[in-house]
Length: 165
Image 1 (cartoon, rainbow, N blue to C red):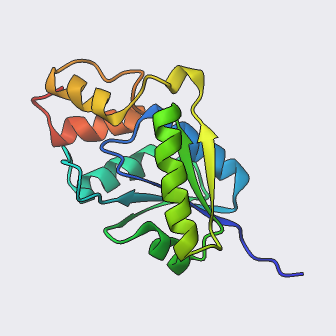
Image 2: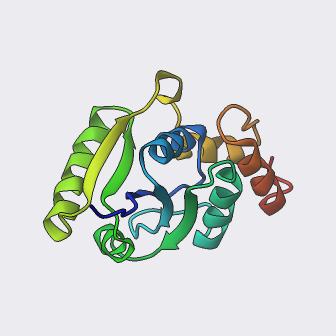
């Protein structure tokens, strides 16, 4: 019997990472030996924060999890999963729209790299309303981010945008 680590990826744009994202990371960290939080690029999205900034904010937010490592990638998720030897891609879903999209992405990733199963975790009720879009709007409105983001993420954003929040 081999003693291989079970490796998972929690991918996303994380623009910025929210408490909902952090809950999915926490749950994945309990299920797998090693978890890569992968800050990804999506050409269809306009980002408030650069890839490097999103990665730094995410790194500050996951320090409590010893088996979680933050990485960034501009490539395809299935290629990243294959290169890391991941057995799972863990995603959170808040509603039927998320579910339909994630099922479609799971089929695509499975067709290219079947060794990584997509695991969909339902968002906890207190995070159903929470999205990075909501957070970005709060930042633009110069409103409090408390209760939406990890405190470490808020501190990083305040360093990046000192006159905004």
